[in-house]
Amino acid sequence: MPVLPLSFYTRDAETVAKKLLGQILVVNLNSLEQRSRIVETEAYIGTHDLACHASKGRTKRTEIMFGEAGRAYIYLTYGMYNMLNIVTGHHDGQAVLIRAVEPLNYEGDTKGPGKLCKTLGITRTLNNESLLGEKLWIEKGKAPKKITTTTRIGVDYAKEWKDALLRFYDADSLWVSRK
DNA sequence: GCATCGATGGTG
DNA sequence: ACCATCGATGCA
Image (cartoon, rainbow, N blue to C red; front, side):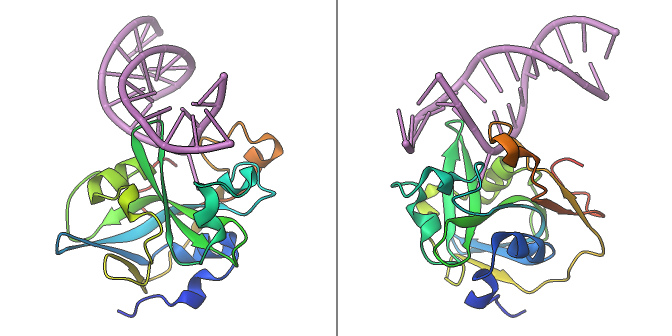
């Protein structure tokens, strides 16, 4: 199947977050192509979004979010879990968090952003890696029949932004982190 | 079933 | 002093 082009990512994070559902994430580390169907995402929509790391401004960590779309933004949270995000937009601090995927040609627990990174072997060494490269890419898949929209998880600190409806998942998938 | 808690280290 | 988490634990 065709690889999603750069133009797929140079749109606002909310649009990309919805469009990513059903697409096929391919992780090619140590010559093993692990294929997954994306079933749950969250949009972090820029500097004005208090839940978004980019709201802290440009720092060493957030610099990637202000960079080129279609690259991986991977950071460590709670000292032990890697989070896989994809930069979107036009150098304006937007990204989409991949929260859950369905394993297609391997086995493992991928219901949650920390768990999917652990299962797939994704760590910060892949930070800023291109989604149009040799190790990471996304192929065209089939869109879900129905998308459910909710508030984002784990962002209660974000004032009025904690209520923003920016989490999306495939309503029929059994691989969502929580309903 | 649920709520609560602690692990563990980068970040500002 | 926080955390874009998760598994274990306690109690029902």
